[in-house]
Length: 453
Image (cartoon, rainbow, N blue to C red; front, side):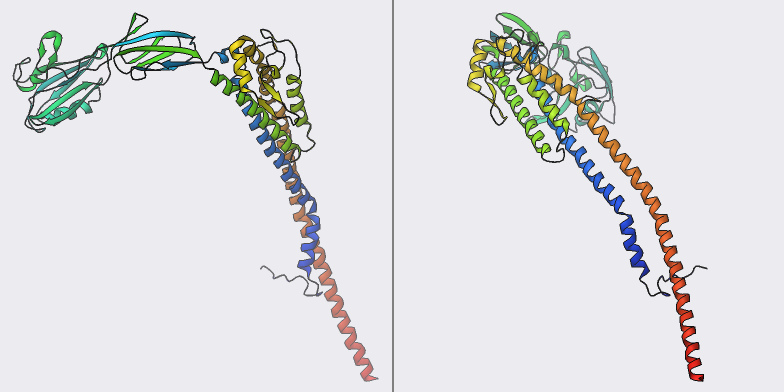
């Protein structure tokens, strides 16, 4: 049977309070370790913030660290109502005369007018072709109306690219069939096996037959499949869609209407300037982060000094750079003031890009001494597995694991310590209680003797 314990009853001492205070003293080493763990975790978080800024710096370098990154062009249409354009890699500067002769079209046909969508058309088999692909439908009593045929076409699991709708006008309802893609390779053809035996007449299901080459064409097409035709400096370029690629290196032309205009492909200096400004912004953000951490969680951490020193070793090198007449960024309009803040002189950069673009490019991108190339290599090394930051983070995480192990062992020890202290106070309580009882007995005996005397 469990016993009810009331420490201190015999002695009058507040044993629970005494034990609690003693255990608080015993827990001080654990509290110290917990405080240390919080500090180390704050350092890990600080390194995460630092890593983010280094990653941004690395990204900024990636737009400047090779000569190809400076081959940035923009394409300008003389009239976007005729065509629009976009640029990809491989573009070169040039001017072109563009004539949009034809726009790509899709086949689109309509049947004769029926009373309404529930009118029965006929029964049999429809074979619908889109270019070289086809699918077949059985039309019977379950789907022989205008609406039923529409749904059978649209819901066919092997539909190869045709859509069906119903348009109801003043003269009745018509089934409209359209190929989903443009170009002659996606021409629409319909052959019919009609239950009434007349596969090419205009009665029953055969009224849907459509094959201009075979003379079966009961209604004029709303539009006929054709390829886009564009003349570039007099040379014909055809496409099944209105998007023409590959005709001009790195340029996509999106034909919009028939007409003639110009295409101008020029170097996009504004985008290059934006990349340089992004480099300066990322550099300043990294310096700010280093300064913040130096006065914060990473105070006196040698990693910050190492990062900063390596960056300035590159920026202050002043060595010869292959393919460039410049040795310092300041010569090309990128400077650092007395507070360590990097600035960009856009006017100076634009002048240099117009007068000595090769030197400007190699100042950043040359494999032998280019600033962005060298800084990019630095950032890559800092962020790689087992790199400078990763190694420091791993060390701190290992430290946290060690602290957790120490706390766990101490917590286990405190259990036995508390049990021992309580046992000691229980023994003390029993002893004091016994002494009190003895004292009371002796007092009574002495009182009795005095009375008898």
